[in-house]
Amino acid sequence: MAYLPIVTLPNPQLRTRSEEVDPATIKTPEFQKWLDDLVETMWKADGVGIAAPQVGRWVRVFVAVDGKKPYIVINPVMVRKSWRMEDGEEGCLSVPGKWGIVRRHRGFALKGLDRDGKPVSHDANGFFARVLQHELDHLDGILFVDRAKEVHETQP
Ligand SMILES: [Zn+2]
Image (tube, rainbow, N blue to C red; front, side, top):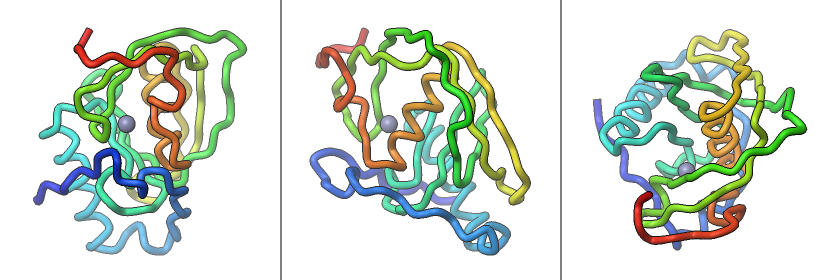
């Protein structure tokens, strides 16, 4: 297991759109080890989610924590977003020392592949729905500060 260095602003590469993963590579030992490293890096940094571009790999992969369980999603695609929106506080491992209020869909669902390459879907409301939206944004080069109504430098 290895911890991966986290890319932070103002690195412009955080604004890059990440590429789809070729499903044939998912089961390779290199990719599987990297997934373990990604999860460990998130735990070490005390995050509730992390996306591949945050550790310098521009592929469409993220980890999102629901309760205490980390879910890996590869090639995620949005399948539902609620009409209802909700404001909530966010921070980001790539934007150290800043927090902000971001308006997100209250309900959100996506589908993708799990770490075995099997189809998986997550349909969430509230905080986990927010995490899914935040992490999916990373894969399109969007950071929470781009969407925040207000950004502050003290943790709520
Ligand atoms: Zn983030």
